[in-house]
Length: 147
Image (cartoon, rainbow, N blue to C red; front, side, top):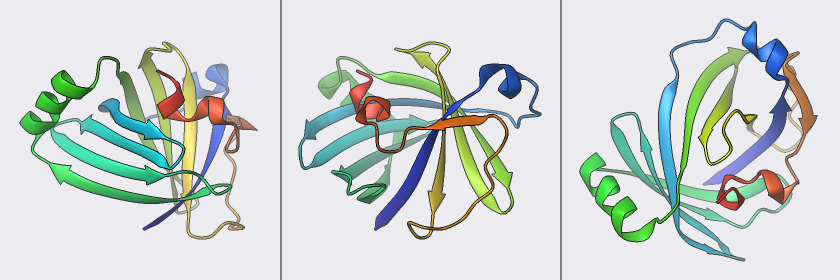
């Protein structure tokens, strides 16, 4: 399955004024990371997921995600992941497109990154006032590089 995603840094001052839904707690770690892609384990509230993502081709990549039992995800964390990311995700719909805004708890506390998934590369969308610099092509902002 193709994933087409754009990422933006978030202006913290403006973000603080936004009315937000209840956040989703996410813990994620990486089992494998290579030039071909990553294998990620994630706990999202009460569910576990195993995800394979190919290397990026611009803002596109292949992604395969499978729900797994939460207890198996927790076991995989203890076996395969010495380090992990914790974040709170806010899902906000703007002009019929879902934005996922992540407030990181660790390892980069107080860092905020927003993502929007698109149907095609040149799809137009409304950029919220709290979204600032685009970092879609900057590998420093890939979650897998935060650890």
